Length: 191
Length: 126
Image (cartoon, each protein chain N blue to C red):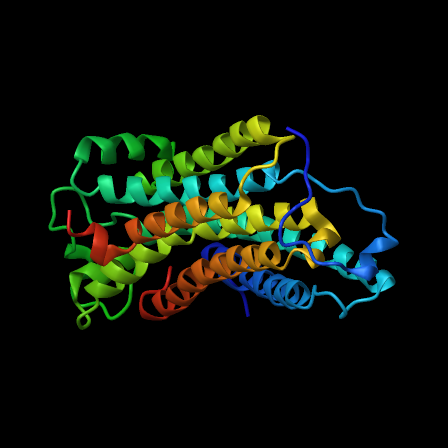
């Protein structure tokens, strides 16, 4: 039982970092949601805030690591042009049912050699590769607001809700990236 | 500008014993607007790179031979726009109170426009 270098990186990018992101988001959202007057004691506030500072910072850090590894490590393997120069762009994909050493996942999807697959690239990958970068930006700004205001968020419900909107926005962008990443790796895995 | 009592503050007895001084809203506004600017730049570059091949080639120059293509430039410039605008706005508003709701709405509109710019059925129209 072993994993290739590429499989290891796709697991780090999608599964490991994605799991940390989800855990940090779930904990952070629950913490933010219940950060209301009457729900936490003074001692509880101190304990709750420490967790929120760590959780939101981890979520932001993990989001940056996810998009950086996705863009600079995994994506080049996805979009590689493997057909020899001068040949038809998708010549290396003829007769394949999965990407191979002569047919990158992008070429495989765009070539439609195994069903109508080009929309997975045109819609799924094109959306995922761009919008995912909104996740670390929103998560970083939200983490800053949580750390900057700290317990003061309890007395400012509107501001707390604004932070939740940014937090959920980061999650939504990550869901698009994560969901399409999982689907694409099923339809056209990195090999 | 001096820090003032913020609107929307509720009386919270649990916070009284923590003796926390009020903080200016400027740094928070800077983070909100910078996030909007970052996402807007991402959407703008994604959309403009479709019809504008010179821009697409310029964005691909950021890939440093790694095979990332134009996405390298789009994301690098997005990160630069986010952090530089954040630093500049933070410096400008660091000890000021600004209209936080207005700044949040500005950031929100910029962010939504940016997100629209990354949506393939939108940018493929150009």
